[in-house]
Length: 326
Image 1: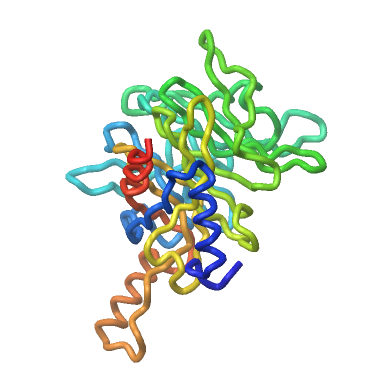
Image 2: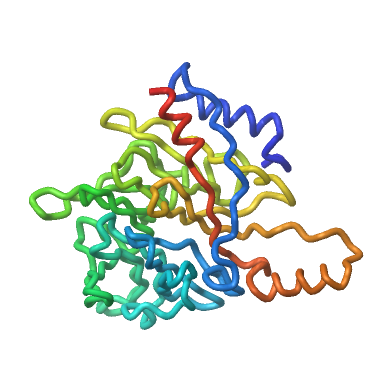
């Protein structure tokens, strides 16, 4: 991978991805610089991943982890501020991560890593569902085999029509990471099918479908030659299929080296993108004044210590640019 995203090779690749969908396509716009989300509260000194929001935007869930497995945390907006996160009532017994609200807020689907009842026991990474019960939660249930197609099924996203998109790491030679969808018919999930644009070797992960199914954001660490870090991509619906994925670029993505960006979630407005990243903020030039030293130490103690945190950026320029081509 070139040292800078602004290298000729990178720009040529971006142009190729942008124009692959048709001669009228233009180079995707560069988004504004992302903003750290709720520093010191949601984004803290642990590894704090991007949040999923209830439809009204007043409840969020996210994964917090350290050296061990993840735990799903819950926070509520109170007087315009996010409350101190607490362990969600359905989480904590097992390593769990990547919660995702359904578009209507009636349930949450998440990843739970458990041991099977078989002999010998095996690790099973599967999707589970928990229903909303008033201001609390019901009992988690494992999703059926039409969705949990193996022992390594990860991050899910749900469309308005009930279709569930997810990552499966398929076992076997020549296989690996691939994105799938299971549609709903007659009240039941149908056998999952791979998405046409996602192939073994692309290493696509973490699908996030727009509620209306018009676009998807995902991450990949293998779509750019020589690139070993996860970066974000967007792909738009094209008729009954999909167009060509485009790399998402934002201001400063090549500053101080590039970061690992993954686990995208759309906010309640369906235009703000929240994602997990190990990016950091710039440090003032040395020597520091006493005030700069105090500010830097406070930031490190709150969140900016090299761990993963939640960031947000508006997708509006990308969505409007695509709309203009239709």
